[in-house]
Image (cartoon, rainbow, N blue to C red):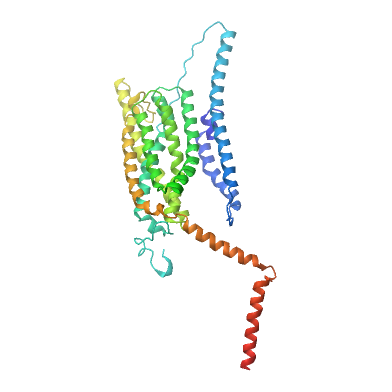
Length: 402
């Protein structure tokens, strides 16, 4: 629905209706499909599932590119058709002025030991940490700090993409193209990081946080293109920022599961999500929004205009977002912080990071084999013989005692 509204395929809904729709729909879907989520026990893995996955991946990429091209070609064809119809139906030339719409500013622990006593004594990286052990660990602090810097910067760019395009003088059709590019490359980033990082970790034993550092540095390029208003640079910036934004979420949650274990993953998962609103508030509201309003007031003062209370401020020109250099600096600091995580986890990724999962799989396999030996009304023949033998020994001992 949001995609259709942005691309002007349907009429844009009212803000209260859209907010209500976005708030209840994901929760309803979660409750609807909650019974379909279950643990599937498997003793071996076949290579066929990988082939099927890549087939669906290729199909989705082709469809994504196809829909973007078709949408753009349809817009051009529709525009040419309307102009041809106007020229043939009336000899009078009608000059229209397109006005841009007003822009809005945007417990206790186990074994009776207090959890606080073990909060600062975490086990090795990769084991199941408690919630407090994970929160007070250097790894979690550096991960959240880097995420706040990276996600805050990329979400600021994504949130203000339309406003940036208007300020830099791009047409509405081009702005819709930027949104399409960011959405498509967001999807590409989500699927690329899982396959790419897994291959490099398996083959070269590279630490996964290194990919977080590289993505942070890559997103700096997109912000620099906006800050210096490079001609047609917003096309490249939309691709880079969309790709980086798609990479962040899968990468962050994968790091949380690998470094801090799966025992309290559902809680630590939400702590990772806290970085998003914090970074968005600091960089979007306090930095980008404040500097945009300040530059807009300067332009109004130069024209001798006075803004009314509650009136949206419009800023035109490259100076409106020139201070994106500040956000670039913040993201670069986040990249440096992530290097601490790279150094601390290097030894962990040199070893077998899936060792504990193999132990769990072995235990599960043993239990499943034992269950298969037992029948509904009793145990299998082997276990039945052992049981009968034990009963005979007990009876013979009782007879001897009598």
